Amino acid sequence: MTDNTIFFSYSRDNSDFVLGLAKELKDAGANVWLDQMDIKPGTRWDKSIETALKESGTLLVVLSKSAVASHNVMDEVSYALEEGKTVVPILLEECDVPFRLRRLQFADFIQSRESGMQTLFKALHIGEDTANKPTGDPVRESPPKKPAASVSKQASSSKKSNKATLLYVIGGILAVLVILYSTGVINLEDSSDDLMVNVVEASANDEEAWKNAQSLNTAKAYLDYAAKYSEDGEYVQEAYDAMDVVYNSRGIIEYSEGSGSEKENFFLIYKGGLDDERNTPDKGNYIISLEDWPVNLDLMGTDSGETGNIKKNQIATVEQVHLAGDKVYCTIKYHQE
Image 1 (cartoon, helix red, strand yellow):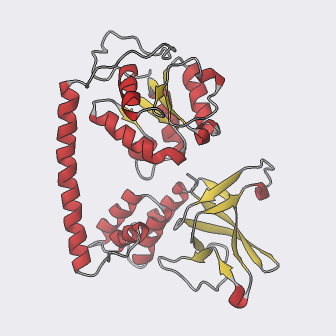
Image 2 (tube, one colour):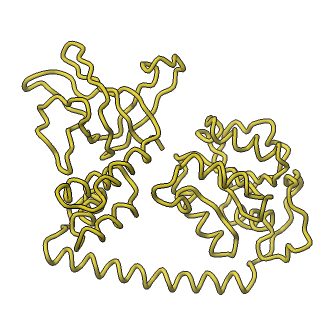
Image 3 (cartoon, one colour):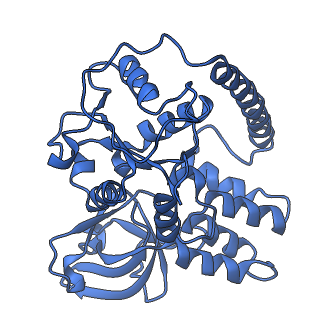
């Protein structure tokens, strides 16, 4: 049976917008489910999304060029419509809106974020008494009425409380960073990814390091933990198992090209630290990407024309090495967002 949970369907290209919107809706009292906020470390990503979509009563779809081109987003929309769930589209940028969504009322964020939020609050009945309101019907297209000037006092109070809590949390984080900086654990020139690695490496003990790795929930964090506690860590095997859970894709990447002084690497071998960049990786090695880099899925025999992408500073596991002239290719397992 569905409940009053609002499920977000969106493209990863719009993650920053979606995260901000989800937090704003939560502050206003809405019951929001977002994969980046609500999937616990170590759980299966695809199964969690499927369950959340099935149990939600409303689907909020963020429409952009990349979203309407996403099979996953469109499959989620089709499922919600077929199951009679409330579907509320948010127009984030000009795009070719699918026909099945054109009959629904939009929250238009292109013209004005403020008016888009007001329309969205009204469509989701935020700040209203929804006890006797039916659920499950799509929001029909009609001229948007002028929304109320503000949400309920309860939502406003919730925002203030959450903001106060957030300030305390930020203050605590800043205090920790000052301590780490003063002791030389981090420096202001660290990248954000290096900083996350230092959080694992600077942990007081095995237990704390493992919890930090779980909170980051990336292959890199788990590998950093396993590298540091390889001899006596209680959770080393769990770390390697967790890496396999994080991976959700396979493909082929160009590891390097050229030779000698002309050689250019796009990845390096990684063992909880960088290895010699001149080395050619072997099966089972972990490699780290030096920049956002394409992953070719056609060479896996699918003939689908699909390509993936691995992000900068992301870890992958080498399954096979291919040599082609002065180029090195690797079949890899990795996490594709």
